[in-house]
Image (cartoon, rainbow, N blue to C red):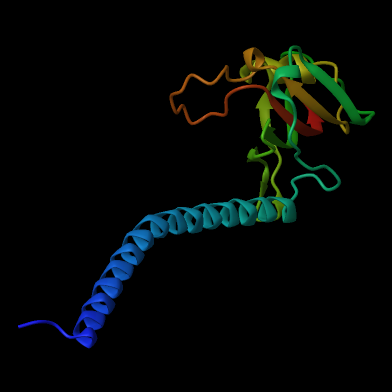
Length: 181
C-alpha cells in the first residue's frame, strides 16, 4: 500500500509541528530561568531602593545625606566641621551626647540615632568607641556637627569574609554633638 500525496503532506505537517513544539519547549526552558533571575534581580533592586528611599525620608540629620565614596582613597582620619559649636570641648575621656548616622563606601546607612523619623541622641564615652570616633571627636565643641571619614583600621577593620554584625572597611559618619560631659 502506497501513501498518497495528501498523506505524505500530513506526515510532514505533523513532523514539523512536533519539531517546532519541541524546539519551542527547549527555548522556553532556557529563557524562563533567565527571566526568573531577571525578575528576582529587579525585585531585589526595588527592595534596596525602597530601603534607601525610607532612609532618605528619615534623614538622621536634616541637610546631610549619605553618599558613595571611594574606599581606596580613605587612608587616614579626616574630620570636617560642617557646623561649628561654641559649647564645652570634648576630651578623650569625655562622655558626649550626640545624634549621628554612619554609612559605608556603597552609600548604605548601617546605623543611626534616627528611629522612625525621630532623633534619639545617645550618650557614649569617647574612650569606649572606635578609635576613629575617639580621635575624631576629641577637640570638638558641643553644638558642632562634623563629618568623620574613618579608615578601616580606625573603625571595625577590613572585610574578613565573615559576618560579624559590624560594617567593615572605611566608614563615614555625620555626628551632631549635643552635649559634652
